[in-house]
Image (cartoon, rainbow, N blue to C red; front, top):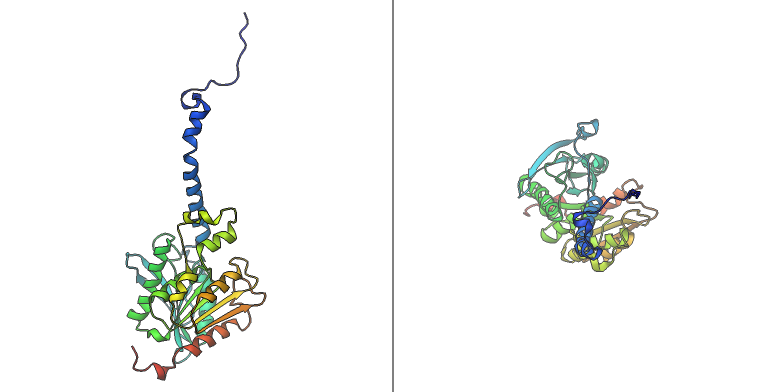
Length: 299
C-alpha cells in the first residue's frame, strides 16, 4: 500500500498540548507584555537625548564658561553659565530645557537672555550632552534641577529673590516641582504640560484614563503649582503641535496670584523665535524681581 507524505510537521512538547492549556499559559503573559510596552513607549516619548560629539556647536557662547556640579546621588552634570552682556545683571535665570537634544540646541535663547541683561545657567540632565549617566526617571530629573539650583545659590551665591526659574516643555515639570519646594523670585513656564496623564490622553488616546496608573511618570504640574508662592508667567502657542494649549490654561488656572498668561497667536511649540516674545518674558521677570538697591542686605 502506498504511504502518502504528510508535509505538516508533527507538534511535540508544549505545542502538542491542547489549545486550552496553551491559552492558560499565554493569557497571563498579555498584561505583562502590555505593561512593558507602555513603559517602553513612555520612555521613548519622554526622552530624546543627544550626547556630546565635539562638534563646533559645542563652542562656548560669548561670555560663557563650562560649569560642572554633582547631584546628591553622585551624577556629574554639565552646563554653561553665561554672564549678562551688561555691567550688572538684572537677575539670574535657571533654564531647564525640553526633552530633546542638549544645551547646544538652546544656545540661542541663552544668548538672547544674556543680551537682555540676565545671567543664565543652562544645563543638561543626566544622559544628555556631556552630563554623566543615562536618561533620567522623574525622580532623577528633580535631583538634577536641585543640583543646578544648589550650584547657583550655594556655589555662586545667587540671591534667591533674584533667581528666575525658567522651564520649557519637559523642563516646566522640573521647574514647577523645584519652585513648589524651594524659594525663588519668579517662575516662567513655556509650553507646560499639566500632567503625564493629560499628555497620554492627548498623544495616546487608545489608552483609557483608567489605565494611566501604569505610567511611571506623574509630572503633576497643575497640582504642584498650587504650592508655588512667587509670581508666575505661563506662555503657550495657540498652535502648539506637541503640547495642547489647554494644558497651559489648566496650569495657569491652578497657579496663585500674581500670575500672567501669554497665549501667542499662531505660536508653535518653540516661542523664542516670535518677535518680541523674549522681551515680554524679560519684562515680566524684571518687573517682579527686586532691583539691585532693593536686594541689598537680603540673604
